[in-house]
Length: 292
Image (cartoon, rainbow, N blue to C red):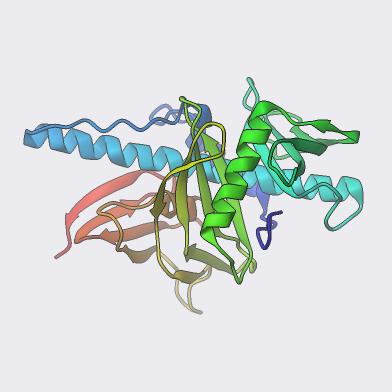
Protein backbone atom coordinates (compact mmCIF):
# COMPACT_ATOMS: atom_id res chain seq x y z
CA UNK A 1 0.00 0.00 0.00
CA UNK A 2 1.08 3.58 -0.62
CA UNK A 3 -0.01 5.92 2.15
CA UNK A 4 -3.77 5.62 2.37
CA UNK A 5 -4.01 3.61 -0.84
CA UNK A 6 -5.60 0.27 -0.05
CA UNK A 7 -7.19 -2.76 -1.61
CA UNK A 8 -10.83 -3.27 -0.68
CA UNK A 9 -12.51 -6.66 -0.80
CA UNK A 10 -15.06 -7.34 -3.52
CA UNK A 11 -17.16 -10.46 -4.30
CA UNK A 12 -14.55 -11.33 -6.91
CA UNK A 13 -15.64 -14.77 -8.10
CA UNK A 14 -19.07 -13.35 -8.88
CA UNK A 15 -17.64 -10.20 -10.45
CA UNK A 16 -15.38 -12.10 -12.81
CA UNK A 17 -17.92 -14.80 -13.63
CA UNK A 18 -20.65 -12.28 -14.45
CA UNK A 19 -18.34 -10.34 -16.77
CA UNK A 20 -16.70 -13.37 -18.42
CA UNK A 21 -19.45 -13.73 -21.01
CA UNK A 22 -18.87 -10.12 -21.98
CA UNK A 23 -15.18 -10.84 -22.53
CA UNK A 24 -15.82 -13.90 -24.70
CA UNK A 25 -18.71 -12.55 -26.77
CA UNK A 26 -17.93 -12.43 -30.50
CA UNK A 27 -18.92 -8.76 -30.81
CA UNK A 28 -16.35 -7.71 -28.25
CA UNK A 29 -12.60 -8.23 -28.32
CA UNK A 30 -11.11 -9.78 -25.19
CA UNK A 31 -9.46 -7.36 -22.78
CA UNK A 32 -5.72 -7.28 -23.29
CA UNK A 33 -4.04 -4.59 -21.25
CA UNK A 34 -0.80 -4.75 -23.21
CA UNK A 35 -2.75 -4.05 -26.39
CA UNK A 36 -4.23 -0.75 -25.28
CA UNK A 37 -3.41 2.01 -27.77
CA UNK A 38 -4.47 5.56 -28.34
CA UNK A 39 -5.11 6.47 -31.95
CA UNK A 40 -7.31 9.42 -32.94
CA UNK A 41 -8.13 9.81 -36.64
CA UNK A 42 -8.65 13.34 -37.90
CA UNK A 43 -11.60 13.33 -40.28
CA UNK A 44 -13.36 16.25 -41.92
CA UNK A 45 -16.52 14.61 -43.23
CA UNK A 46 -19.58 13.85 -41.13
CA UNK A 47 -19.06 10.14 -41.69
CA UNK A 48 -15.44 10.43 -40.69
CA UNK A 49 -16.36 12.32 -37.53
CA UNK A 50 -18.91 9.64 -36.66
CA UNK A 51 -16.34 6.90 -37.15
CA UNK A 52 -13.82 8.83 -35.09
CA UNK A 53 -16.32 9.24 -32.26
CA UNK A 54 -17.17 5.54 -32.36
CA UNK A 55 -13.48 4.64 -32.22
CA UNK A 56 -12.95 7.00 -29.28
CA UNK A 57 -15.87 5.49 -27.37
CA UNK A 58 -14.55 1.98 -28.09
CA UNK A 59 -11.16 2.97 -26.64
CA UNK A 60 -12.83 4.32 -23.49
CA UNK A 61 -14.71 1.03 -23.15
CA UNK A 62 -11.49 -0.97 -23.59
CA UNK A 63 -9.67 1.06 -20.94
CA UNK A 64 -12.60 0.78 -18.53
CA UNK A 65 -12.73 -2.99 -18.99
CA UNK A 66 -8.97 -3.25 -18.49
CA UNK A 67 -9.23 -1.18 -15.32
CA UNK A 68 -12.00 -3.46 -14.04
CA UNK A 69 -9.90 -6.55 -14.77
CA UNK A 70 -6.86 -5.14 -12.98
CA UNK A 71 -8.88 -4.01 -9.96
CA UNK A 72 -10.61 -7.35 -9.53
CA UNK A 73 -7.38 -9.32 -9.90
CA UNK A 74 -5.48 -7.02 -7.52
CA UNK A 75 -8.13 -7.40 -4.84
CA UNK A 76 -8.16 -11.20 -5.13
CA UNK A 77 -4.36 -11.38 -5.10
CA UNK A 78 -4.18 -9.11 -2.04
CA UNK A 79 -6.70 -11.25 -0.15
CA UNK A 80 -4.70 -14.36 -1.03
CA UNK A 81 -1.44 -12.84 0.26
CA UNK A 82 -3.10 -11.75 3.50
CA UNK A 83 -4.57 -15.23 4.00
CA UNK A 84 -1.26 -16.96 3.28
CA UNK A 85 0.75 -14.72 5.60
CA UNK A 86 -1.76 -14.64 8.44
CA UNK A 87 -1.25 -10.91 8.80
CA UNK A 88 -3.61 -8.04 8.00
CA UNK A 89 -0.74 -6.20 6.32
CA UNK A 90 2.09 -8.65 5.61
CA UNK A 91 5.67 -7.34 5.67
CA UNK A 92 6.77 -6.23 2.23
CA UNK A 93 3.27 -5.55 0.95
CA UNK A 94 3.97 -1.90 0.28
CA UNK A 95 3.19 -2.02 -3.43
CA UNK A 96 1.33 -4.43 -5.69
CA UNK A 97 2.47 -4.70 -9.30
CA UNK A 98 0.46 -6.93 -11.62
CA UNK A 99 0.39 -8.11 -15.20
CA UNK A 100 -1.28 -10.94 -17.13
CA UNK A 101 1.02 -13.75 -18.25
CA UNK A 102 1.07 -15.16 -21.79
CA UNK A 103 -2.01 -17.27 -21.02
CA UNK A 104 -4.00 -14.40 -19.56
CA UNK A 105 -3.56 -15.41 -15.90
CA UNK A 106 -2.61 -12.61 -13.53
CA UNK A 107 0.67 -12.43 -11.61
CA UNK A 108 1.15 -9.87 -8.83
CA UNK A 109 4.43 -9.05 -7.12
CA UNK A 110 4.06 -7.49 -3.66
CA UNK A 111 7.04 -5.60 -2.35
CA UNK A 112 8.75 -2.33 -1.60
CA UNK A 113 10.82 0.19 -3.50
CA UNK A 114 14.08 1.56 -2.13
CA UNK A 115 14.16 5.16 -0.84
CA UNK A 116 16.12 6.26 -3.92
CA UNK A 117 13.65 4.36 -6.15
CA UNK A 118 16.49 2.45 -7.77
CA UNK A 119 15.41 -1.07 -6.77
CA UNK A 120 12.23 -3.05 -6.11
CA UNK A 121 12.20 -6.00 -3.71
CA UNK A 122 9.52 -8.70 -4.03
CA UNK A 123 8.38 -10.34 -0.78
CA UNK A 124 5.32 -12.22 -2.04
CA UNK A 125 4.24 -13.41 -5.48
CA UNK A 126 0.59 -14.22 -6.15
CA UNK A 127 -0.06 -16.14 -9.37
CA UNK A 128 -3.56 -16.87 -10.64
CA UNK A 129 -3.97 -20.65 -10.91
CA UNK A 130 -5.86 -20.33 -14.21
CA UNK A 131 -7.17 -17.35 -16.19
CA UNK A 132 -10.39 -15.71 -14.98
CA UNK A 133 -10.65 -17.78 -11.77
CA UNK A 134 -9.64 -15.16 -9.17
CA UNK A 135 -7.83 -18.01 -7.36
CA UNK A 136 -4.23 -17.20 -6.51
CA UNK A 137 -1.32 -19.35 -5.32
CA UNK A 138 1.00 -17.35 -3.08
CA UNK A 139 4.77 -17.80 -2.77
CA UNK A 140 6.70 -16.12 0.03
CA UNK A 141 10.13 -15.10 -1.19
CA UNK A 142 12.73 -15.35 1.55
CA UNK A 143 15.03 -13.61 1.13
CA UNK A 144 13.15 -11.11 -1.02
CA UNK A 145 13.93 -11.22 -4.72
CA UNK A 146 14.89 -8.32 -6.94
CA UNK A 147 11.87 -7.26 -8.92
CA UNK A 148 11.61 -7.44 -12.67
CA UNK A 149 12.36 -4.33 -14.76
CA UNK A 150 8.60 -3.86 -15.14
CA UNK A 151 8.12 -4.15 -11.36
CA UNK A 152 10.62 -1.36 -10.81
CA UNK A 153 9.23 0.91 -13.52
CA UNK A 154 5.63 0.38 -12.38
CA UNK A 155 6.56 0.94 -8.73
CA UNK A 156 8.28 4.20 -9.66
CA UNK A 157 5.19 5.22 -11.62
CA UNK A 158 2.90 4.43 -8.69
CA UNK A 159 5.04 6.48 -6.33
CA UNK A 160 5.31 9.41 -8.74
CA UNK A 161 1.55 9.48 -9.18
CA UNK A 162 0.93 9.20 -5.44
CA UNK A 163 3.28 12.11 -4.84
CA UNK A 164 1.52 14.25 -7.43
CA UNK A 165 -2.02 13.28 -6.41
CA UNK A 166 -1.34 14.47 -2.88
CA UNK A 167 -2.69 13.56 0.51
CA UNK A 168 -5.98 11.70 0.61
CA UNK A 169 -8.49 11.52 3.44
CA UNK A 170 -10.09 8.22 2.45
CA UNK A 171 -8.81 4.90 1.05
CA UNK A 172 -7.76 5.00 -2.59
CA UNK A 173 -6.76 2.30 -5.05
CA UNK A 174 -4.41 2.50 -7.98
CA UNK A 175 -4.09 0.50 -11.17
CA UNK A 176 -1.26 0.40 -13.71
CA UNK A 177 -2.01 -0.41 -17.35
CA UNK A 178 0.99 -0.62 -19.71
CA UNK A 179 0.76 0.60 -23.31
CA UNK A 180 2.40 -0.95 -26.34
CA UNK A 181 5.20 1.63 -26.38
CA UNK A 182 6.10 0.90 -22.75
CA UNK A 183 4.49 3.98 -21.24
CA UNK A 184 1.87 3.37 -18.55
CA UNK A 185 -1.55 4.63 -17.61
CA UNK A 186 -1.79 4.92 -13.84
CA UNK A 187 -5.22 5.46 -12.29
CA UNK A 188 -6.00 6.86 -8.85
CA UNK A 189 -9.60 6.28 -7.78
CA UNK A 190 -11.53 5.97 -4.50
CA UNK A 191 -11.83 2.51 -2.97
CA UNK A 192 -15.16 1.00 -2.07
CA UNK A 193 -15.36 0.70 1.71
CA UNK A 194 -19.08 -0.11 2.03
CA UNK A 195 -20.60 -2.93 -0.08
CA UNK A 196 -23.83 -0.92 -0.33
CA UNK A 197 -22.12 2.21 -1.67
CA UNK A 198 -20.20 2.62 -4.94
CA UNK A 199 -17.97 5.73 -4.98
CA UNK A 200 -17.64 7.52 -8.31
CA UNK A 201 -15.40 10.54 -8.84
CA UNK A 202 -12.35 12.16 -7.30
CA UNK A 203 -10.25 10.22 -9.80
CA UNK A 204 -7.40 10.93 -12.15
CA UNK A 205 -5.58 9.15 -14.98
CA UNK A 206 -1.85 9.71 -15.48
CA UNK A 207 0.36 8.88 -18.43
CA UNK A 208 3.81 7.95 -17.12
CA UNK A 209 7.02 7.25 -19.03
CA UNK A 210 8.19 3.68 -19.58
CA UNK A 211 10.87 3.98 -16.88
CA UNK A 212 8.29 5.24 -14.38
CA UNK A 213 10.24 8.43 -13.65
CA UNK A 214 8.28 11.08 -15.53
CA UNK A 215 4.61 12.06 -15.57
CA UNK A 216 3.93 12.89 -19.21
CA UNK A 217 0.28 13.83 -18.90
CA UNK A 218 -2.53 13.82 -16.39
CA UNK A 219 -6.25 13.88 -16.93
CA UNK A 220 -8.73 14.67 -14.17
CA UNK A 221 -11.77 12.52 -14.85
CA UNK A 222 -14.18 13.69 -12.15
CA UNK A 223 -14.02 16.34 -9.45
CA UNK A 224 -15.95 15.39 -6.34
CA UNK A 225 -16.82 11.87 -5.16
CA UNK A 226 -20.44 10.79 -5.53
CA UNK A 227 -21.52 8.00 -3.19
CA UNK A 228 -23.82 5.88 -5.36
CA UNK A 229 -26.19 3.58 -3.41
CA UNK A 230 -26.19 0.04 -4.74
CA UNK A 231 -29.83 -0.60 -3.91
CA UNK A 232 -32.92 1.23 -5.10
CA UNK A 233 -35.30 2.73 -2.53
CA UNK A 234 -37.70 0.28 -0.90
CA UNK A 235 -40.51 -0.71 -3.21
CA UNK A 236 -38.70 0.26 -6.40
CA UNK A 237 -36.22 -1.27 -8.84
CA UNK A 238 -33.20 0.54 -10.22
CA UNK A 239 -33.32 0.55 -14.02
CA UNK A 240 -30.32 2.80 -14.68
CA UNK A 241 -28.03 5.31 -13.02
CA UNK A 242 -27.34 8.89 -14.09
CA UNK A 243 -24.61 11.47 -13.62
CA UNK A 244 -22.91 14.33 -15.46
CA UNK A 245 -19.25 14.65 -16.48
CA UNK A 246 -17.81 18.17 -16.72
CA UNK A 247 -14.22 17.72 -17.86
CA UNK A 248 -14.74 16.19 -21.31
CA UNK A 249 -17.38 15.63 -23.97
CA UNK A 250 -17.46 11.84 -23.51
CA UNK A 251 -17.75 9.40 -20.61
CA UNK A 252 -14.56 8.60 -18.70
CA UNK A 253 -12.71 5.30 -18.27
CA UNK A 254 -13.89 5.09 -14.67
CA UNK A 255 -17.51 5.57 -15.76
CA UNK A 256 -17.20 2.24 -17.58
CA UNK A 257 -15.41 0.72 -14.58
CA UNK A 258 -18.21 1.97 -12.31
CA UNK A 259 -20.85 0.20 -14.41
CA UNK A 260 -18.89 -3.06 -14.56
CA UNK A 261 -18.19 -3.27 -10.83
CA UNK A 262 -21.56 -2.12 -9.54
CA UNK A 263 -23.94 -4.74 -8.18
CA UNK A 264 -26.64 -5.22 -9.20
CA UNK A 265 -25.56 -4.58 -12.78
CA UNK A 266 -27.46 -1.62 -14.25
CA UNK A 267 -26.83 0.74 -17.13
CA UNK A 268 -25.65 4.30 -16.57
CA UNK A 269 -26.63 7.47 -18.43
CA UNK A 270 -23.84 10.06 -18.62
CA UNK A 271 -24.35 13.63 -19.79
CA UNK A 272 -21.07 15.16 -21.00
CA UNK A 273 -21.13 18.73 -22.33
CA UNK A 274 -24.72 18.38 -23.49
CA UNK A 275 -24.31 14.97 -25.15
CA UNK A 276 -26.13 11.98 -23.67
CA UNK A 277 -24.42 8.60 -23.52
CA UNK A 278 -25.62 5.23 -22.28
CA UNK A 279 -23.07 2.82 -20.81
CA UNK A 280 -24.43 -0.70 -21.11
CA UNK A 281 -23.75 -3.40 -18.54
CA UNK A 282 -20.94 -4.88 -20.66
CA UNK A 283 -19.20 -1.50 -20.83
CA UNK A 284 -20.26 -0.60 -24.37
CA UNK A 285 -20.97 3.13 -24.79
CA UNK A 286 -23.88 4.28 -26.96
CA UNK A 287 -24.13 7.92 -28.07
CA UNK A 288 -27.79 8.91 -27.61
CA UNK A 289 -27.45 12.41 -29.05
CA UNK A 290 -27.93 15.89 -27.63
CA UNK A 291 -29.68 16.36 -24.34
CA UNK A 292 -33.26 17.65 -24.91
